[in-house]
Figure 1 (spheres, helix red, strand yellow):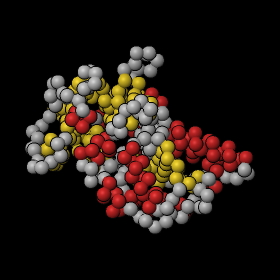
Figure 2: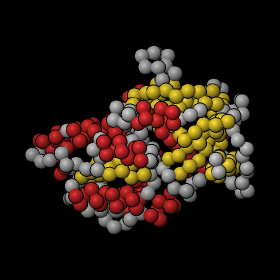
Figure 3: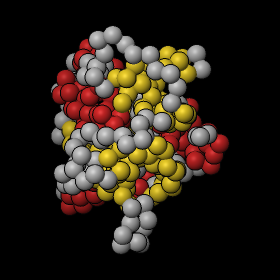
Figure 4: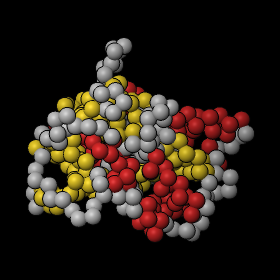
Length: 319
């Protein structure tokens, strides 16, 4: 399957609160016996191919099948069915090669179905549905249909951490800048991210810099918080900037994405001068161009605490 064939058209979705989801199956669910649908943002998928030869690695994690030689690059292959707890009825026939947060890895799946274009408001936050930390959202694929199909949007960053628990946490902790962040007194950093692992890493970094923060799980939740702070600031005769010093937002989030959140902030005079930093696993020059297009003041790839610290210090010093 060619993921790049409509890349130009897909990049135009930035700022429209739309995205495209690649749907796939992992096998039978142990609880229902059904072959449930799962999804991943197309921008994280480099290519989809028929399962190649896998070379097993000695003493590897039980969910790491081994490595594959893909166009001269040695790529780790993760048994996604095993991580999620599904039993493939047809075996693993497809390999999804993914690239995000500056890492390349492949996921073995049972089969790939289709690519669907959705509004982020068709995706409900997974928290509250009793889904585990490996799922960030539940996508309603057929809006308006009471019997709509559902797909679980996976937190692939958390999947990687499940398989390689030291790959993010310890490296991130070593990089952390423990110098206090120069936040104006009484202000906070407003964070929006739907990924549990991302929120955990951000929280550790902000605590290390002695920075006050408010953590939200979607762009809509962050926007609602800003609306509330704007009303309070008006009643107290002050600027919202006296309450929120900077907004740090992910791009992919249920209900409202980071592109839309950024655009709303930058177009609203109440938040004039409030810096917005994008913190995303959607790395690459294309995304960076669109980040600048919606007016963001910085773009940091997950997970790099040193870059995040430097960017926050820069925008705070220039705002």
